[in-house]
Structures are given as structure tokens and as C-alpha cells.
Image (cartoon, rainbow, N blue to C red):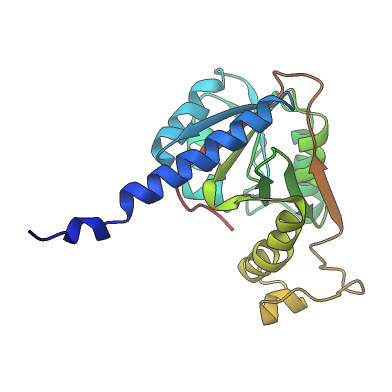
Length: 222
């Protein structure tokens, strides 16, 4: 009798992702943060859209995950009042003003650079509009995150952000900074394009209704 099916890794991978997600969700609950898990990005996107009432104001953080799930487009085309940071006709000052307005949105959608098994969200920003909204401003924040970003410890999270997320995002944005050119983190304190200006760690929330972390059993984003 052949045992070739033992080499189908899909069930084991699905179990592993669910297990990591559940441990993280349990830890988030202790920090007054709601955690949800969905096997697929499609299910996750549908759940996020179902949370947001029509005519609510919606702001965004820059996120490859949100883009890959189609959430940017669906929000912009949906029955919401969105702060459209993606309008290519905006000048630099106009874009900055849109990002400022998004800090007072009813809802703010973003990804995260890393999340620890004990429920801490770790993010690095250049300008700070994304991490600012995570910390204060919008009434409700939804963080969408693939299970590939779950790491064991805070040190692992910081390492992941600097050695994985930053080089990839620098390359995506066409920034002429060392990590975007070499794929490795460097000390680039003298460049005005530096991505690592601001590092935030969300340890918890005073308001248990403010933040929801939507974990997805897929590899998403950087």
C-alpha cells in the first residue's frame, strides 16, 4: 500500500497556522485587543468589510496585505467616506493633509510589521502616520496580518521588521537607502529616506473595543 499522501503538507501547515493564531488571539485578549482568525484572505476581507458601517469615515495605513486582499479598492468604491491617500494627483502637501485627516477617522485599516505570540504588535515607520493611528486618534482600528508575521519574542519581531519588512518595503517604494539596495539592514541615520525613524510596540489597549487584529492563515505582505 502506497503512503504517498503522508507527504501532503497542506493539513499540517493549516493546523500549524491555526495553532499559532489561537495562541496569539488568547494573548491579545489579555491585552484588551480582539483577535479573529480566518483560514483565507477572502473570508478575512469579507469580515473586515462587515465590521464597517456605511458612511463611516475610513483611513488607511500603507499595507501590502490590505492591497493583496483587495480591501483598498473595496473601501474606496464602497459606501464609505474614505481618506484617499492613493490619489496620484495629490501634491506632497496634499497627501500629508489626507494622512493627517485619517488620524481622526471612525475606522483605520492597516497591516503590521510583526506580532509576537504574547500579543504585542511591532511596527516601524518613516513618517509616523501609520503608527500614530495605531496608538491614538481613530475610533476603531483593524489590523490585518498573515500568520507569517507571528514570531516568538519581541527580539524576533524587531529582527523581522529590520531584516525582512524594511528591505522589501524600501525596494517596493524605490527608496535609495542601504537596506533597499543590499537587502540587509544598515545604519542609515544620515538619509532623509530612512524608514526606521519610529519604532512602536503596542502592549495593549485601555478600550477593549478599539482594536481588532484579524489573523489570516496565509502568507501575506512583507
